Image 1 (cartoon, rainbow, N blue to C red):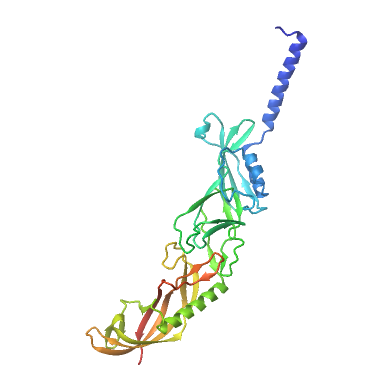
Image 2: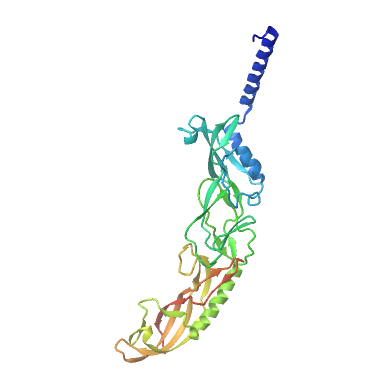
Length: 348
């Protein structure tokens, strides 16, 4: 069938209109950096569903922290940089233009997205970040109000492996509502971009250290009164007492009487060693304590000897744990207490 002239004019007009609409849509579409800014601004406002719509991402993974409640609100975007062409593209999108767009959050933390053409817009190929966490102190990980148990069967077990979670880029507040009087976070903000991991660091508060000092004082009282077999008190050098009549091994001491001259002042710190002997929290001696020992025993020739020692407490290793409520505990069932001494002869 042949169109008459008016019909041909109408068809040509429709075609021209379609081309015009296509052209206007094409020149009016967002650039890759604008898509990135829109995506981050939606996240800053807590609009996670809208952010995913903007990203046009496919096969988005799930995770407990991909919720609007987890994100902090109102953080700012420091910069979104000029898009750069990705040489070689993305393996699944060989025939499409691909750009990388870098951004900065939280005072300079840098991240980067890859964007591929997706019809009339752009698709963010990697809108989420896989963040490795090293939760050393608590048996749970808490981001904002969202809490995830990590080792519910044994809260005293120290984790030495990272646990990964998917998260949106942005600013978060970890362990914000933990009712702890013992700990204060060193950095209350977590900045998530596409670099780094999160190892929560805390300082022990003055109240926490007072609790620890009281526990050390009570344990030391038991040690010097010889009321506990868990307490090991011995010289740090070769584990022998150097007396005026020769060396005496601790196992050759027949009678001993200890007296506290000065108590050690201690503090509790994060050991930064996930496999530390006393766990991730350890007691450190700030001001050495002093003990007096009056004893009898056998020297190396098995001759009886009486001796007196002045012993300085340089280390007091007391097992220290943290409950999920943020309370310091000092379990004494089965855990040895090590009091390391530096002893010198004293006048009897």
